Amino acid sequence: MVEPGSVRTVTADRPIDLASTLAPLGRGRCDPCHRVTDDGAHWHASRLPTGPVTYRLTRSGRCAVRARAWGPGAAEFLDRLERMLCLDEDLSGFVPDHPKLVDAHRRFPGLRMLRTGLVFEALVPAVLEQKVHTRSAYASWRKLVGQFGEPAPGPAPEGMRLPPDADTWRRIPSWTYHRADVGPQRMQTVIRAAGIAESLERTAQADPADAARMLRSVPGIGVWTAAEIAQRAFGDADALSVGDYHLAAMVGWTLLGRPIDDDAMVEYLEPLRPHRYRAIRLLAISGHLRKPKFGPRSPHTDHSRR
Image 1: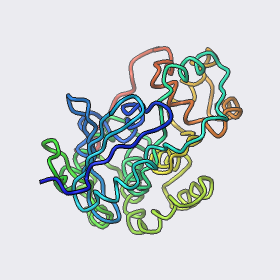
Image 2: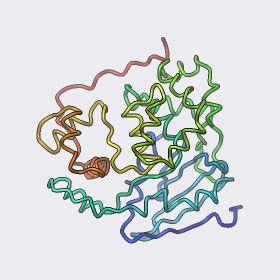
Image 3: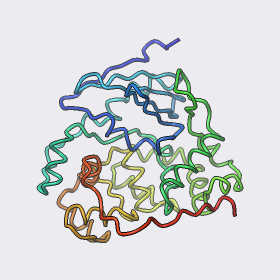
């Protein structure tokens, strides 16, 4: 039976592109914590301060989102929905002049940033994605959540699970991380962060620059990982993923017709501050962000069998 008060509709003064906005929450098509069903509904399972929650989001017109939530954290989730979808963001200062960005912004006016406020939830998969193939990181996430997560509350799609809590991540044996193809450095970063998860959650209330500095004070969390967390937990439209293996070259090819490095990307995108990440997302969802294919991908090595 659905709990009373578990349904809410929020509206905005401009369109809400739900699919593009929520896409960064998913870690691959088979993410056990995130599903998009055939009816277009977006499901996600999280741990909030008041308890676990499963939520289902759907569009309710061009400028509205309907939410239904189950579990002890349902009321808290619904209360913070507008903040999560960044319905209060101000785009008046975002005036790109590159034709591809102008086109993307025109075609996707409903893109929003994400402000889940859930720092540790964003941290773990970001750490798992450090310096490895994305598909390998997604597989590690699936294995560990599948083994140590819990069934998502409510009538969630089959197989959906809550991510493990911080204490569980801290207690997972080293050999289990290894079997999930997570190396010692990433494992130690997750365990270290799990030990201070409560204090890390407080960074969601800090200024973005201060929050990034606090995150980077944790050994194993650098500029790239802090940005990946900020993009999901803080709603930071300027959180540029400096250090990404492909991003600088893709930005160069897309906007300049040639590859560039991280320093050149940061310099080139400076006029777009504080919307540099927003610009990257717009280029990505519009199909503009790409680079020429020159050869086969680098091979994926499975270290879990070594």
